[in-house]
Amino acid sequence: MKKIYLDIEENHSSPDLEGLVRDFRSAGIEVRPLTENSWGDMAQALVLTDRQATADMASGRLSVEGSAIALQGKAACVGYEPPGAGVTLSHVDMIVQGFEELDVEFFRRVYQRCHGIPWTIALTDRLALRESVPDDFDVFYDMYRQPGMTDYMPGLSDDKEEERETFCAYIRRMYAFYGYGLWTVAEKSSGRVVGRAGLENGSFQGQSVPVIGYMIGAEYQRQGYGQEAVRAVAEYAFCELGMERIYGFVHKKNQNSRRLIQRVGFRRIEERCRMAVQMAGRTFEKDIAGYVCVNTKALYFPGKSITIGDE
Image 1 (cartoon, rainbow, N blue to C red):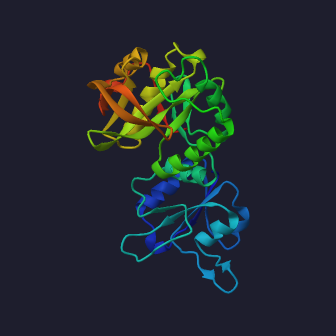
Image 2 (cartoon, rainbow, N blue to C red; image 1 turned 60 degrees about the vertical axis):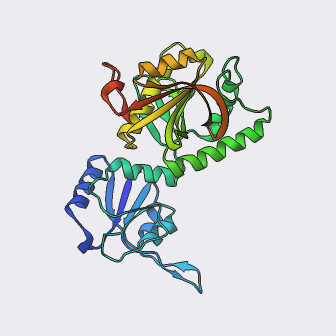
Image 3 (cartoon, helix red, strand yellow; image 1 turned 180 degrees about the vertical axis):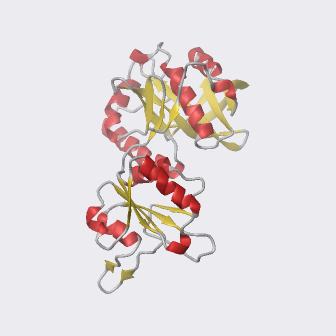
């Protein structure tokens, strides 16, 4: 995202919006007023507008105001609906009603989602957690089929193309709807995919709860990658998603995984029970030990830095 086009009525401006404009410019993002000719210069641009696109039903042509210019230029568009102003917008990628809590990263992610660019979730000392992309599938398919990888979690079928379709549908729907899911874990230095980690939807004592999931490829194990990735997921859940607690359900015989999440700050809540667990859109039953991690400083380890997002 290199440019922001503003189409905000003067009486809808505010100190918060003015501060946001300064932040854009400080981040090296050009801010311009939106004009009728802007639609031809929408490369790497996002439109911020409080004006609705209208359509001529006879011709099917959109007006050249507000979100219509973004549509014509195939740009990302954020609509501003000031409280009490009677403005209702459509044809936009996101609607906001104020700017006080918004930052440059928010708009960058709207732009990325609009253009199918995977979000960077977190950066650790050695790892990058990002949304998965279709090209990751072949690596994961081979990884799941390595000896011992599916001893304590569901495996994949022999129908590789069907599994590919399931994987692509998962990343297309899960991230956009929930804002989380299982993400790709890659080495920062090499870009090599080393595993998956993220958040799934589960249940505990009849309540819907966020559940952490993780997998590190056999050749990358015993290097501390699992602990580093799990800690990054937990910090993202607490700091970015505002979750108060997250759960972990681990097969009772998977001692390595049980030790890992306890080191990161999870405490045991159930020693043994049989329950259905969902992972990557698949539901399966297993004998588990249950753990919970509450939003505390138990996650933080000296010398281990985590950056949320890709800044």
